[in-house]
Length: 151
Image (cartoon, rainbow, N blue to C red):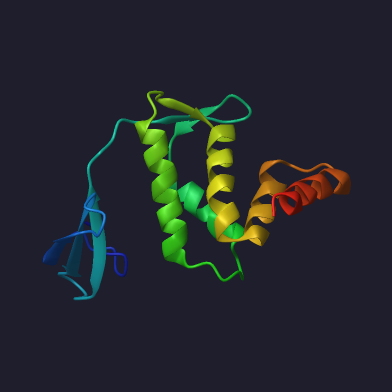
């Protein structure tokens, strides 16, 4: 495991324990060069999932892209990182549990919006405005009115 501080390739495991969800093992490691400690998580490798983008391009599924998108939408909002990680885990689990090995960005975007709406409505609108590519203020207002009607 490469040290995130100095890049040295060798480290030793100081502590191991199961994560709260039981799906991974949390390991505390210490770099053998700079002696700084860092955490890694070991998870079971799942079947690869291919994401089909809007332009038809295909790429490997990357859960970090989902988390980063939600982080951007929640910027300067009172949403705990742990909640976003839970939402990302749930989305990844839904995708893994589906029988399809290919998923579209449209499906992923809808799953993200489902998880963002109860967490923070402002973040939901931010994400929806980018994801749905609102062309004008009217389409943006329709989405806001839909949100208000649901209350």
